[in-house]
Structures are given as structure tokens and as C-alpha cells.
Image (cartoon, rainbow, N blue to C red; front, side):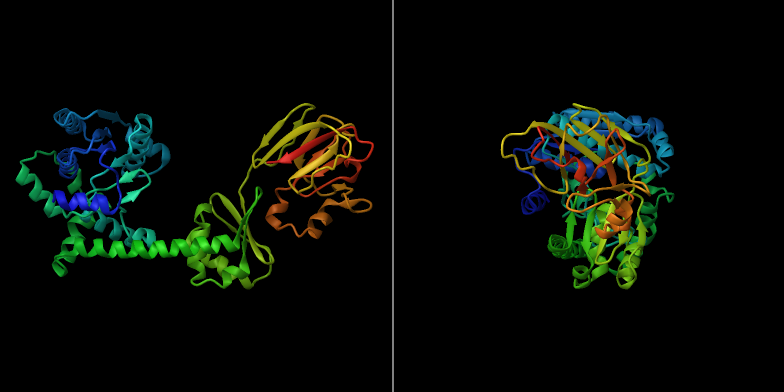
Length: 442
């Protein structure tokens, strides 16, 4: 088994022989085996143990057992005592979800602080099979169908090539002692019901089920990589990211294979669920203005593109920019200013994210606020006054971006700059300008 695990580590480039790992040890059979395996492979490691405060004296005994195990292997030892139930109640999640969130956050914190190369967990083939079936039961995409990966960020799983019976054989052969967690047999938890009631039936049908599912997971993982590359290529062509929004070209999306699947992957960072994505695809042929929401973002189907913006709830106030102030940060807006003496032959820079203004025409303090109905200004390059509402229509600003347009206003009430769009002609740099205030949207 040692040769099998070492080959798996090398095949998946999990870590190098000189790396020091942070090994998650519960005291159960799986993690005890992994500790012994790493010791025999002469792989440097430290031990990390979580006490979740859920099983009283039994959990105390687990912690003492793991501490002595670390001493046996002369490994550095870290332990943390969590208030798991309190955290679960506070976040409105299950105890299992709370324990998972707490332990992985703590593992990563210890790893980073101590400079360890990776966090090793003792997941094996049977764990991977359970995860795949659980994900399939709840509904999943390719990522859920490949189950547990050999390496995810700083997490490595050296035992994924090994079956549960192999682990039992190993502890018998090497006379290892471990702690049994009684909660593993509780039918309260979904994973346990799957392990105790469903998987035995499936193993009657296929005695080699764990290996079969491990092979399937490997193939699905390969398919996911192909999809990932296809999505990345599509994003390079169809997606444009600006400070105020992300844009997706509808025409290019319509020409992709499996449009809903690809769009779901593109929208995954913005929190859109697959059923919503299917509705978005159905809206491609509809009139502009259809709105779709995720917990964190708003998507609007515009004429030829999808426009995604963060859902901001604080754009209702006004903010002041004082003379000499170099930085102003608002939710979703970051401005930086620079005051320049105008050299001879000076040509002001141009760009939507930049306004070059005659500093001596401005009256401070300047105000930054959302635009309002009735606002008007005199856009550079246009003659006369222009209602801002009409200007935004002319510029074909999408509906959800209109809600996030800000204006920079002089103390005398004149709009100086429609931020990210056009400065006002009354504040432009002229041959008489002596000082220029550059205002950049970062």
C-alpha cells in the first residue's frame, strides 16, 4: 500500500519529499493510517486536531489520544477548541456545516502562519464515492460529479487511491490503535444514511463500487477540465470587465455549445443558480430590460449584451471631496485626484475613467452623489445644455448601470463630471488654465 500511495502522490504532484505538511488528525482509523504512512515515507508533517465541543468526555479523550500520537511521531502539535453549536446557531446552518467551515478556516490559518506547504486530509475512495452520490442526490454539475479531488488549492488527499478495506488491512498488519467516533453510525446525518443504508445495496450490485466510482470521478474530472478550458476561451471572447460592470456578448454566447452550461460557469462567481441561468438564456430573444437577481448581483438583458452589476444598497447619500483631498472611496466607487501646474503645450489626457478639470474654475468642496431626474450639464463636445437622463439614453447606458451613475458637482451646484462618461464643457482645460485637477476613477 505504501508504494501505491507514493505513486499516487507523485502522479498528482501533491507535494515534494522535503515539504512539511499539516496533517488533519481526528484520531479515527483513516487519519491514524495517514499519519503512519507519512511517517514511514519519511515525509515531514505536523498534526492538527479539532475539538468541536460536541461529544463531551469522548471528545476530550480523542484530543488526548491525538496529542500523544503526535508525540509518538515527534511531530509539532496544534489543537483548537471550537464553540460549534453557537457558531451554527449564529449562522443558521447545520452543525456539520459549521464544523466543516470552522476546521478548514483554522487549518488554513495554521498552515499560513507556520509556513507549511499543504494541508493533508485522510479522504479515501469510499469518501469520494459517498460525496459523489450525495452531490448527485442534491443536484450538481461536473464539479460535484468528480467528488473529492486529489488536490484543491493547499488541500491534498494522498489516500484517494486507497479503499477502506485496504485501510483496515493496514491497521491490522501494523497493529495500529485508533479512536472510533460513535456519531459516524448516527442516522441523523445524511452522509451516514448513505453509507449505512444505500451504499451496501449498490455494493451488492457492484462489489468493486468504490474503485469504479473513483475511475468515473477521474474521467469526469478530465471532462471538467475540457469544459473549463472551453469556458475560459468563451470568456476571453464574450466577456468584458469594467470597473462598474461585467458585460457578456449575447451573440457570442448564442453560438456556443451547451449555452446554459457555459453561461452558468461564467456566472458562477456572481452567484446565479442554474434554473435562473436557463431563464436568462430564454430571454435572449426578448425585449431589452429583463432583470435577474442573485444574492449578490443584478443582471440585466440589454440590447446585445448581458450587464452584471453588484447589488449595492448604500447609493443614497452624498459625499464631499475637499480641496487637497487625494482619495475618496465609496461603495463601488474609488476616486483619486492629482493637482498639476500646467506646463507649456500641455495636452490634457482623455478617457472615460479620467476628467481633466480647470482647478481654478472649481468651487470646493466638490460633492459626489448619484444622478437625479432633472440633472443637466453641458457635455464636452456638445453645444448647449443636456438633460442627464437624455444623455444616458443617447450613450445607451444599460438600465442597471443608470442606477449606479454618479456625478461630481461643484459647490455652486454645477455638474462638473458625469463620472465615467463625460466632463462638463464649463470646467474643461483651456489655453488660460494655470492648474489642472485630474480626477481618476480607479
